[in-house]
Image 1 (cartoon, one colour):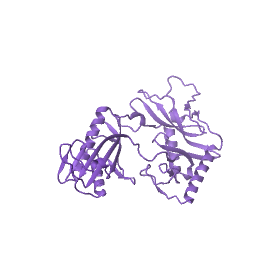
Image 2 (cartoon, rainbow, N blue to C red):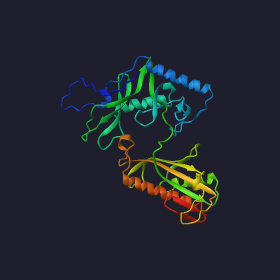
Image 3 (cartoon, rainbow, N blue to C red):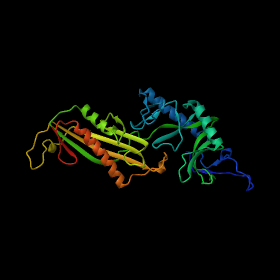
Image 4 (cartoon, one colour):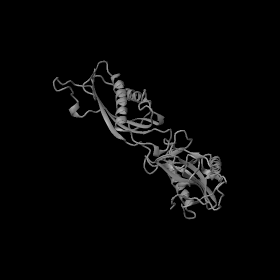
Length: 350
């Protein structure tokens, strides 16, 4: 079992107070993480055995949906929502994304492995800092006796650096082979279900194809000010997402957004004849129900560090909900020749 408990900085040479300390990239650090000899090699062999068995059983290769823009494929794992990456593997900086299953692979089995290894070594040698926040929290790649590690580090306003901490290994030599940190798979491909926000209901005397209804709902998510990337899932759910962008809804903030629309065209019996109690009931040709589920995170800083993102305030939630509701209501109205909103969630369509 590999364990990670941070790093201990070893400066063994006393430096005169007037001497400029060498770049942190020229130092080598002893680590507190440890592993048994052969453990990484055995883990890699077991992972390859799993992949080979899955391919032999006829499981099909698919695009890795959680690795957009990467030229790699996946196969279905033990659970449908937990895909496994197949070679060539993708190098992985351990703190770069949530939901990732981290593993190990030889450099030769990794996508642009030699190039990645050279880049990581150059970053370590130069002391390059990544993802620095206003508080001075940064990330850095450092040399270790075993290879390389990816760590957090504190940078003072004067430019002085603290000791690397919270480290994850990137490069380790095991049984004479150099292994890179890679993405083995994804722990959960589906977006978070988020918080149910509101429902919209349409009672229509007109009949529409399901594809037409899906089209107007997708347009609602794609239109300004939401401007979300959209996808119709095999389940029938409609997704709208945005990542690390400047918000058009919450001015002055950056946002990560997932909107899920769950639709139903089968009305419960109590909804098949619908009209305010003061008026006679009217038969409807079609029922359309839309359940809206939202997940929004916000950030004042221009960063992708997970620690900088938080849930919106109640006032921000309200603004997002109003913008989303307005787009959806406007799009649903396009299904009608004559429209009548009975209340804020119920549209009568003629």
